[in-house]
Length: 434
Image 1 (cartoon, helix red, strand yellow):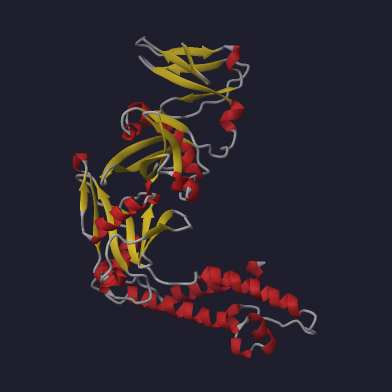
Image 2: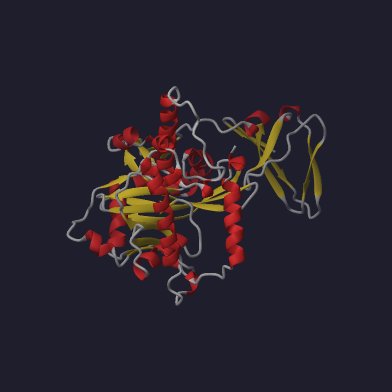
């Protein structure tokens, strides 16, 4: 059977026999098309001018969506915000027909345009919203949605996407300041609005902060729980501040989303959800509460989610916000740029090119010529040994308490030390750089 709706064509094969059957696609109109299984999203080979045979098992069936080969193989185009409509409440977009549209039409394209989606090079074979936990607010609800993505190759991944709806009259700020947050245009009972990433809602961020600060929990159906836990250092940073704190979403996103609360707290929402002990929580809690290491941002809270009978999953962490001017990578790149500019500016005055040692481990910065020291600048040369010192102090702090098995140092012999040193030395030699 063939079923068509607008631009879509579906071939339906049904075997009512208790024996396996062979069927052949022989219609000329499907030459150059790629059949795609409706449910698994697996793609079959392109139909060519030769017999195209399918085998159906007993009482089996196939529902195949037909796409032209050029369309199926074309790279993802620029994301165009889809338009959806529902009746009743906006939450109906997460039920039945609305849910199917989200899973097939909306989320695959939206995920690919986000910076935190890691698998842009993969072909999504199946996408479902596995769970959506309602998070009630004063006059509305947010939904914490867990998106399960399967690929033609590789393991299934789960991503976290908080959802919310605003009428168009209230969503203008999101559209103008955070267009990347808009997932779809959503018309509810003929009223225009937007479906968007709720992390860009100050009200939702306030709820997250309140969960952690107040050690609160939100319980859903079937034993689902969202809860927050403050750390030992939370009260010392919060002090006499009054909630709600002003918050803003960080401009730079990678595999997570960062939120600043009143320039005192830093919250990181993990977009990819992974089971098991979160190493950032485990190490952060150890350095903050067990060792009290002063040279890391203190861990002051955790946001967790779990279902009945399962271990908690870390969704986000709260840290004390440390004032800074960037990181070592940014500093290094800036210094390299300034060094090049200084060399170009003074090349006419240099009669002899300053010579560097063959290996940086053999360098004695104090023995460098005054001209070379001037070109390199003094500030960066002071920061490099400080970075090494802090790294060493961090490792000493992690290994100082033998009563915590997870942080007990593994044996490291002189042979291991020499091997590691030689490996680093070889990699840093000029021949391995150029």
